[in-house]
Length: 262
Image (cartoon, rainbow, N blue to C red):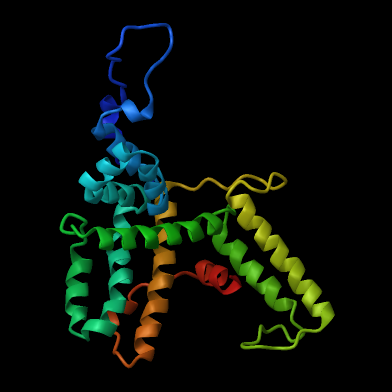
């Protein structure tokens, strides 16, 4: 994702030390002005990282308290592609139908047509948005590890299915014979190795494939689509009708295969 902070580059020059030069640097992050601390906080990936940093010094906690909303918006902008703000907001809002009724669909449709962070000023909503994006990005990092993820994960699911005696993965609790269990474990182990390699924890495997920002944005959107579909299914099970426009997008076969394997 492109960084939203390039316009702030000149601010990253540390301020001069108020003390005479003694031959030893006297500056630390705690001596930086609040504007710089706010920018640093905006680069953090999750709210847990934000809380941990704020807990280290009362000064940092004060900066967070004074600028929490803009900091959270910057964090979201850093991790969520602009083209996916609409589907992120939809995914967050769909469960509101269970609490506010079917009239909420009109609000969600209007929100999807003109998605923006500008009107969101509630820190809790922004935190939830950041949490959802962090979860989606975690899945995207693993999914995007192969050079051709769509083909890789479809083949992986096929291999996993082929390990069953009848070639079809059953639903529910089943009894697995030792030979089948061993073969399934072999496939699962290779896939967990992919997960570790995607985060740099598997030195024996190649580094993650490099994809363009546009491709990564597409992967992110497909993963949001899968999560949105899951939440729509939950809403439908509670007796609510899902409007047709909610089904205009769907995750591709690669993402579907990846999630089925998980």
